Image (cartoon, rainbow, N blue to C red; front, top):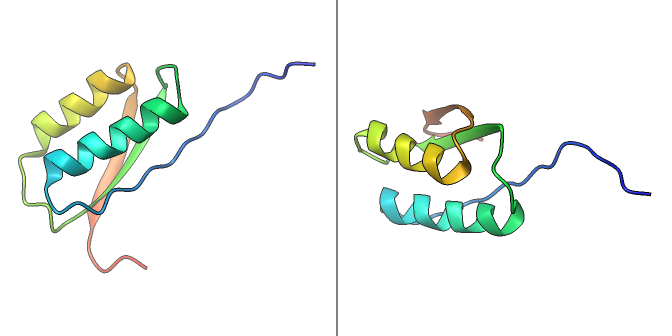
Length: 77
């Protein structure tokens, strides 16, 4: 019997270039979640010194304009 429920996927990229890290993570997500998502949670290293607005726009567009929350951090355990 089919069940409906929440689907979940997590990805990780360790690329030092933010554009490449985002591309890798989105490719992994598209493979894991064939549909758009409603909520995306992003955790990014504070080592990425970038203008986040274009990056966030790319992520939202690629994932079907989900609610997007997240933060940056350093020294996270």
